[in-house]
Image (cartoon, rainbow, N blue to C red; front, side, top):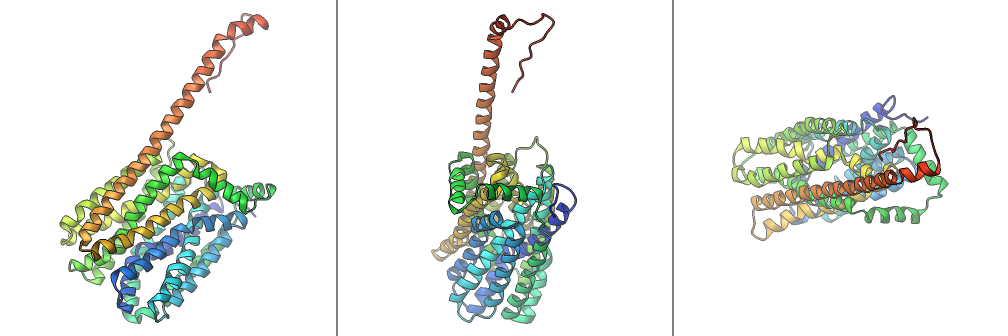
Length: 444
């Protein structure tokens, strides 16, 4: 049984996506606390532990093509359930390994790919179930990414203090298994079934998927968007990984840090919904809004190290980071559909997530390199702020290119209409009509 867009079971699918984003929100946006747990348990150096966290986050985002392939071949439900099993298994195994080298496999790769399947599917399923209210639905779905850190960060900090490292990852694996339940709500929509039927009619094989990606690669507008997301996510995940440790270095306690992350979570919960609702209007340019969001977050990140010793500044920056870092996901489906079309949304989002994955892989170690070679956390935050602003300008370039194309198309339509009007007399001479009959030239 299939669902109809914007009504009925589609709203239960949205609820399942919110649940998935709650789990993802803690694993991704509170990953700085997981990073501290790895540091303390293995007594490893900062750079090694940073590479593990970076690998986890990179696979979370970079597994987009894997998720889109599974969705196109099977369904969103299968992709979500498979991801849940992989994520849960990887987290449980991480809790019992005795050598940090194994965590590259269990946490970095296995858990990262599992979370990536869940995360990408939770985004793409919204595009299949909503049309008129797509941006608003995306905003509601990704608000779960703020609810997760808000509720779960203090809870899992207490769990870590009581049950230590192994118990922490065992219970986190149990939480991840809830995505299996959320995936069960992802009943195929009419849009998803239509896409699968089209693919089966074309007998889509691996080479067809490669061909689809090659068409996407040739899109200049898509390249600008991908570059913007790449630069922005270098910064965003650098901040999420190192913000907790930065706060500890400036005399905050672990419980205070967990509260800061909770503040970031609840801030993100509200702003993502509001951002999605604001962009639901056809008069709003999503890419222009992204330019504003990335630029404001970048400016705040550059300023923050000047006041990082003050608790008030830490709370304010947590609000800014949580509020603006996740807004982009409320409009990602609409941006991809506007550039590539509905039929390529799964491949388009998957391609975009490869750039996001590359950014998340570079970001955390970048701060580690800066600190290891004589820099400070403040220096790494300044670099992150500059990269965020550059990402915003890349999105601005895309919207300017699109407007130039639209203007050219409008001018071409105008020329065609004038030519038709010039030939109007010739047409009337060849095919006489009564004088009372109007010849209407329709504007395209």
